[in-house]
Length: 489
Image (cartoon, rainbow, N blue to C red; front, top):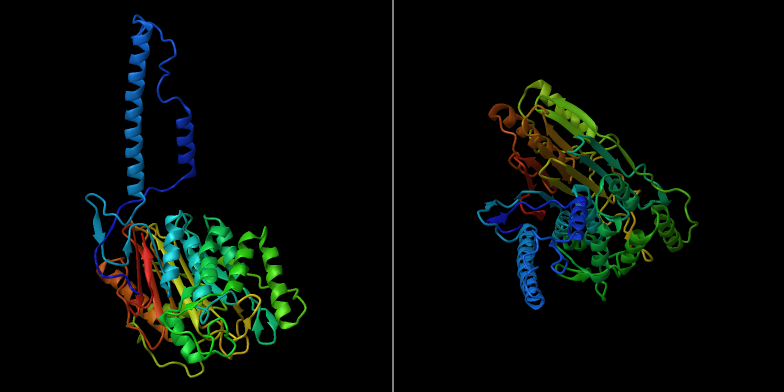
């Protein structure tokens, strides 16, 4: 559910840096006060002329006073640090923001548990990649109808520190068996995290592993998908004992998937985790262990300069190049923005997909889109791994669901504002995304405003996630409003 529309208080958190802890340790290793029992020179020893007993009493009293002073100071410091790390408590003289606006970072996803996990990774010292990858692994557990370890991924990452933009792809689809794709999620997300993440890889897997092992709640999105799909091939994972699909609020577990995630966290190398997973999948299907594996890639994002800044998206075979072509044509024509809900192409078929986005106030953005190429993928559940394999039979263009888009404002602006958009339910939602961006550009040009654009209206079924960094704050929203829970700090 969307957070209640009430004031939320924030205060600036202190950034954790290893060097600061090292400095503190070095400082506390030095004596805080001189040893009162050590002989002092005439100028420094006020008790030298006193009798020995009185000197020892006076020294003890002095030591006690100093110790009490240090204890009070230490408690005050701890209290200040605790307050600085607790964003829930209103700071003295603090200020509030509307829901979806945060001082530091935020994440938005289709599942409340996964948005919460992303926030926890943020506050544990992670960056937008840690938060986004952790939430994507969480969605692989709680939304098996739209994504999972068998899914294909596209991603777009803007690094505000370096200014570089990077596109992520799972690589060409590889077949495990006729119509069944090789799982690509773990190697793809591991590559992104290894290059840009801050927290350890096992840390990111803790939350998803716990959800798979101890259980998660079937939310409205998954319940609707189960009601529409039925339970063929999905039992016992998503079924009651009588074979009926789990409904809203039911608890589901996936201990086999938990074991896969646990092995991925503990394996010395990704290759060993991959080989173990392949052996289990091959055993389920009665096949030899395949010698191929999806090879994910990281490459520079596509760029399109516009008067307001720079547009970034993913390269072919995603829908990114087509999206940039459409935007360029409209911008050069100088005409009005296209209809946000135009008639759909009769040949276009959109597989189910899942999207999420994370952003921080400095302007780093991660957009992720994934798909099993159909609701619940192939419908084939691997009993040894708890993974639903992707569908490589469905007649659909695999690129139509992948078109994340980032607008980075002109570098000569005082504030390098960033806007990120990612949609599921394309191509109709991609049209709405195009309309939203063009509206934003028009507003920036005529009103000299660079903040987040107003939400466009939705076209049919689908979701549009919008994140932005503006005025040293992180902004998140969605269309339809309330469809995707968000968390931030």
